[in-house]
Length: 435
Image (cartoon, rainbow, N blue to C red; front, side, top):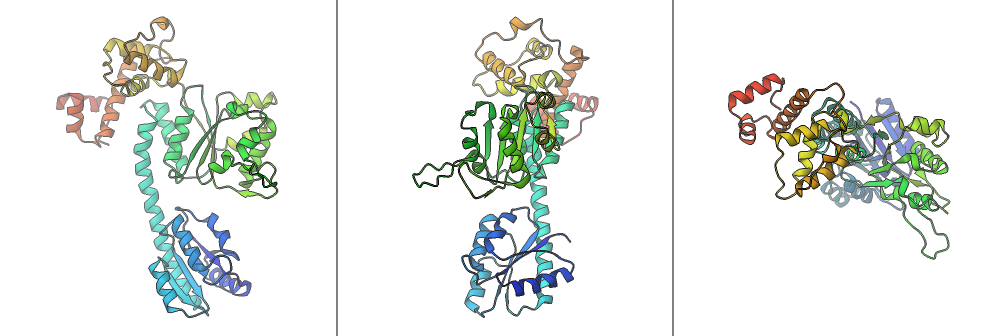
């Protein structure tokens, strides 16, 4: 059984004695003298049980129970008191306490209750993670569109990173969809209910960049304090786009934050604790930037521990048509794509990537010509003839419809207006199975 006992008591002698009892029972324990100190350690994925004294200065055990319930109502909390108080015990149990003990504590009974609480908590966290994975798979499929091998690999990478809290570096060409990938990762992570704060480093004011990122602490009392972007992203995700544009001195402060998870506001003396995930994106080769002295090597190696690449559209085969149709569907009364339209979309390499496809789809919806001036540019993905690209498109449409219909072949037949045998033949041809 995994999990941690979080012990909170302002009496050092009692705290040390109970801590030893847990350790002798081969249980992991973390001790805190102040109840405020534990709050940053608890989230909805914490496998643990909180054992806390009731009567403490500044924050009582009952108040701590209420604060923990705000973070996660299912977090098990066991209260300890040196004063027999039946109404308080009833009140606490009604408020969600797992158990209530009077000091001196029966250590064996407490350890038994803690083991029981940890088992229940472990099962609850596992259930939540599974639910997030199932929901995240659907959200990821709808946000990171396409069925090409490289996009499928990108979705696998994002799914793997969703279960951790590691910082991530996203690379890719301009317009390839780096922010889309970052938002998708945030949406399937444990931080999905918190803020996603996007920051374009190239657009920050060079003179005030540290104030914009880290905020200002006014010691004069004149009201000049300011919350920075890092604090706005606390408990959520901070997305730093075009990180190669960040000044070297600010890169140094960012590295320290990534390592220590705390920072000081401009003009401030005390540290501010941070609980966030940082996703950085770069459109240029950071190794070349590093060799040229424009990017810190220590920051690069810190970020590249978890790195994903968003492929350009020219490497995504029939996803070109999937993306075009997606953006086309956002317009009212948009015309349907004809076979010759699809052929042109597949043969063009889209140097502006997804952004260019979006703009072209909007023009097409208005009846304006698109790609006419670029007919000689691009012949689709290298090594793929037109027949292969059309087959890729057909496969991606079938895969998407199977996913949306949750494997219901009758719904797929109706949506695509295909006879049963034709659908069965195509599923066999592309080795597709029910979702």
